Image (cartoon, rainbow, N blue to C red):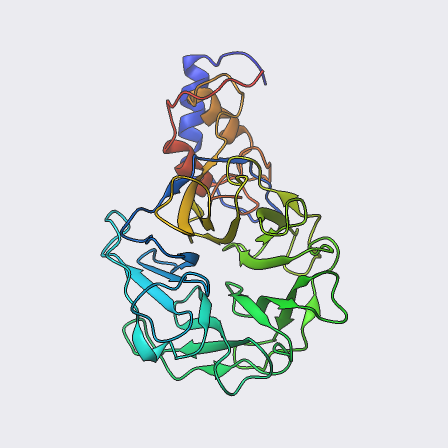
Amino acid sequence: MSGKRTTKEILICALAVVGVLLITGGYSKADFVFGEPENLGPVINTAFADGGPSVSSNGLTLYSGDAPWSLIPGGYGGTDIWIATRASTDQEWDSVTNPGTGINTSYNDGTPHISADGLSLFLSSNRPGGHGDNDIWVLTRPSLDALWSASVNVGPTVNSQRSELFPCISPNGLELYFYSSGQPDGLGIGDLWVSRRSTRTDPWGVAENLGQKINSSKDDGWPCLLPDGLTLIFNSNRAVSPEDYDLYMSRRTSLEDPWQEAVNLGALVNSPSNDGAPSVSADGRWLYFHSERPGGQGDLDIWRASIVPIVDFNGDGIVDADDLCTMIDYWGTDEPLCDIGPMPFGDGVVDVKDLIVLAEHLFEETASVE
């Protein structure tokens, strides 16, 4: 359709929202852009290395770590895991604190990842009882206000005599993504791997390399699986100097399908400095990562960039009733142009979730698409 809508057409489109039946759909491909990255400030970042963010699903807890070359004072020996909390997502973070020996040891502990339900905390450590240099461990708790259990090694199907780091558990708890360095059957300096299990109580299966669509001949690591389980963001130095990393993204059409060719996230998120350790908020609105770019508080800082959906569907420079009518035209379909909710990539069907996202941007002016 083209041209401006009449008042009657706009009214009909608006009323059509009421009572529309929701139907299921397939793979979503909503378009988005990143906002200007912002530093989380001196409450979170110090003059030392602050990196590896992992944000809980409720947005109220931020887990992070330091680095061997720049340890945050007040730790327990080697690298440690640190925690910041806040009362609500509308409030600022409280100061970062060390959770103590319930999580950290006198060895190197780091690269934390909190599960979607908040009941499992995965980390890497060279604490005793492992299978190699650095291993992946997990702590569990029965509820969000309970204490963490003692750490448990995830086992030899994941951990090897090499270094395993950067764990990431899938939202359904059935896939564990991680990094392993120097494997004889790997593709590069360090690769991304995945181990699977049939149920949450089953042991982890033998790890599989994610293959050439994801891994390169360089160093590929720090995976982040988005809430839909269909999008993987990670860092790699494949196109930059060995010391500097960029963020890349790959998608798959379903949980059973292979990953597609990874693409660079672009110059706004990726700087000439080291950028890595991605973590996306559960609502899909924020990409957290660490970076050594200028403008930080110290050595390595935690930053975030907003994920903004493209909702000016006709490219006329304003989000208005015409865009609403376009969405209604595709209601109940899997049209990727309008499948913008839940953030950031939709869910395969144009429905009330997409309407909610569109409503948040109504009457905003945008850069007109030629």
